[in-house]
Every structure is written in structure tokens, then in C-alpha cells.
Image (cartoon, rainbow, N blue to C red):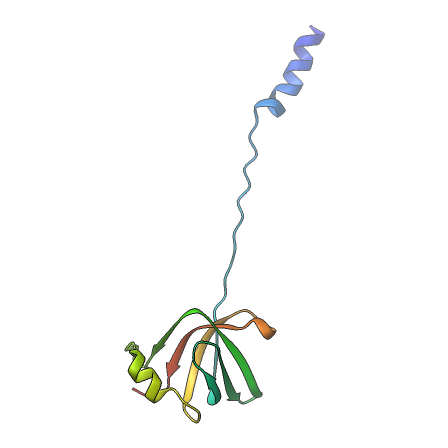
Amino acid sequence: MLLSMALAVVAPFAWGQVSETSTTTTTTTEGNGTITEYTPGSAIVLRESSGPRRYRFGKTVSYVTRSGRVLDEDTVRTRVKVGVPVRVHYMGTGDNMMVDRVILDED
């Protein structure tokens, strides 16, 4: 009888399953300003209302116009330069702001 009661108390713990779900949230933020420095494949510095801000490029960066048209490499070389107003989508904070999209403020 005592053994039966002990097994009845322990059984739920022995056969119970614990499930844990982990969720990672990635937030993409947007910055905008005029390009003051541009090193293709490496970094871009924008003059923003709060002052200059440096962004690093991620492994893949897409360049698009305001209407969403994707720019090819030749167009990027001629249109993305110092003095051009852009918006950037980035992830991270501080020195780890990684750009994944550069949006020209013109079509």
C-alpha cells in the first residue's frame, strides 16, 4: 500500500514532459540622412538630425529606390555617393548597427 502511494506521487514527474519554447525577436530600425562617407561593402556615414551616425554593412545589402526598384551594381556605383539623401534599414545598436538595405530617396 505504501509502495503504491509512493509510485502514485512520483509517476507524474517520471513521465511528464517539459517543453520550453524560445523566441528570438529581431527588430529592424530605419535611419535617414545625407551620405557624408561611403565605403562600398564596408560602411556608410549619414548626417542625421542628431548628428553623424556610422553604419556597417551586413553580408548582403540591397540597394533600392523609394518606389522599391532594386538597383544593379553599375547603378549603385554611380548613384550612391557623398551628398545623396538615403534611408537605411539596420539591425543592432551602438557600434553594431548592421545595414541590410539602402533606400535612395529618389526614383
